[in-house]
Amino acid sequence: MLVLAAADVATESGGLDLLTQYGVLGIGLAVLGVFARAAYKREVDRSDRLEAEVFRLHAAIQDRHIPALEAAAHALEDATLALQAIQQRQDVDRAVAERDRDRRDGGRGR
Image (cartoon, rainbow, N blue to C red):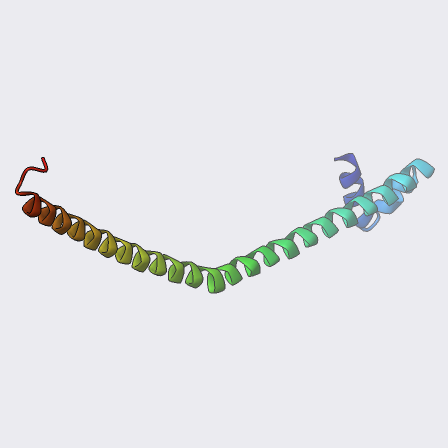
């Protein structure tokens, strides 16, 4: 906090004069404050740039992957319906085979 306050003082007109009254310590504090302000600005800019990249990638995911996932969901639905039809046909075939077996055995099978 003290360093950022010193940076604020150093950037104001006449603020540098105030810090130089303290000699080498004041000049060192002013340099450190300017460095801290530059580092903070650099990190804020980097954060903003990365946030924009995240938004861009999120939009790309929405544009490319969501339609593919929807198509896959429809394909799974179609496959499920086909498997249900096959299962129903097998059940019917099994019931017909059982009925025929019962007729052939004269109803004694059970």
